[in-house]
Length: 46
Image (tube, rainbow, N blue to C red; front, side):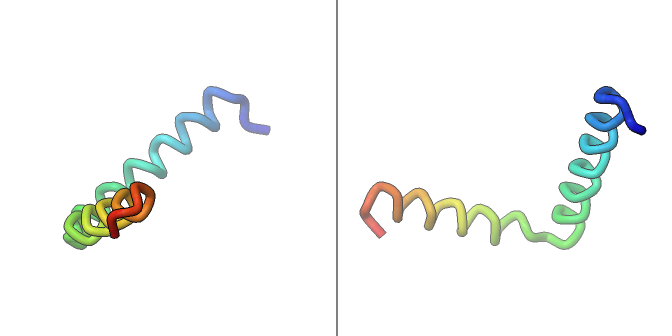
């Protein structure tokens, strides 16, 4: 059984791997556009 520290470290490593994969695939612009659209919808402008 994994203790809390090992589990948090594992999740941190997995998160870093996903971030690096997204940067490698050049998906930063798509994420930014989606974030902007969500913010504009919440405000009620878009």
